Length: 438
Image (tube, rainbow, N blue to C red; front, side, top):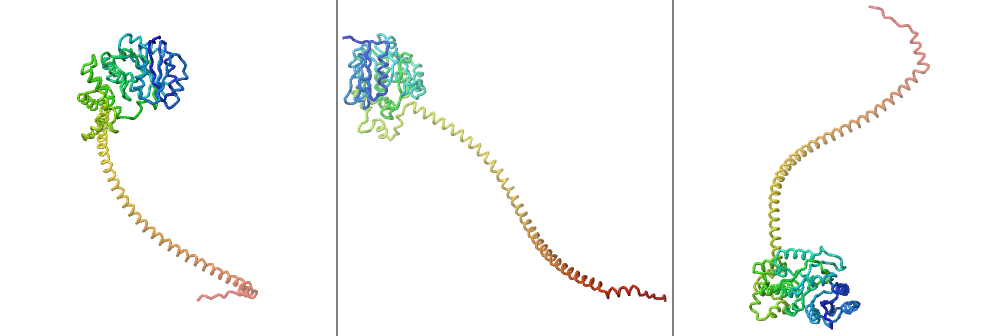
């Protein structure tokens, strides 16, 4: 029976829209000597039919009757694998055509974990470099670049996902299976795989990670994240990371945005008191609906937020410092405004006095005007009375003129009578009597 050079495990769950693209990216690899093991973990959509639409003799497809979770599905697929090298691709991600060949070449015969740089794409397969996770990843790569290789994975899960894992079978046989952790089974396994030999980090973008609302890490299960991160960091600190001294280990952890100092300390203390690792791992699951860390905080009368990540606490402190500076700046502004307001108040008071004075003047003027109005009204009444008298006098004059005119008419008539005319004639003819001087 032919043994392939590499086995690729594809766990699939409810990725009908993406799984065909994922499978085709594996089958299109330049390193074609491979087997492709696809396990449908009891998907509720058309994922299983989509898997069967891809025809290739290198594909081996299985389906679960009930959902078993990502870690169990991975362990099952890896146990079935026949290849010398083992790789994983989640059913919503995509390989670069040269990925397997480049990583196998970079890894050689070393019993190490190998991974590459990651590109981010959206639900439609388009580049998503501005997505929040893409920006966080770029920052994590920048920070890790300042550290020794042994501290890379302690500073962050630089691989991002099991989709970015490639390793020889010998490493899997030595490290063992993936732990029952919902969010950090990949990071836990990578840290265990890197305990003795640091990983091979190929600085080429050979994996495209798809970001969409159904990503597992998009789930808002804060306390599960905190407990799982504290668990694997406690194991890493309690074990040995070759080539990493105490200072370098602490520096790497402080670079890690997922470091929860109080939570990790609690798990480290618990690990020293518990005889078996599975008892410590049990703290990563709620018991009776209650989580270990917040329950312990409440028992101590503490705020559960003491278990927040170091970066979150640092950001809070920076935010508080910024707020304090802003408050101080606003206080200075308020003081300056108070002085300005006092000056304005004085100006307003002076203006108010001036207004009062003008109001008093206007009141006095109003009274004067009222007096004048009364005098004018009296004069108007007097004028009206005089006008009425003049009107009455005019009427009388007209009446008198009428009487005079009537009398004149009669006079004229009398003067025109023949007798009167004769008398006037006789009077003119009568000699004037002269009065002798005395």
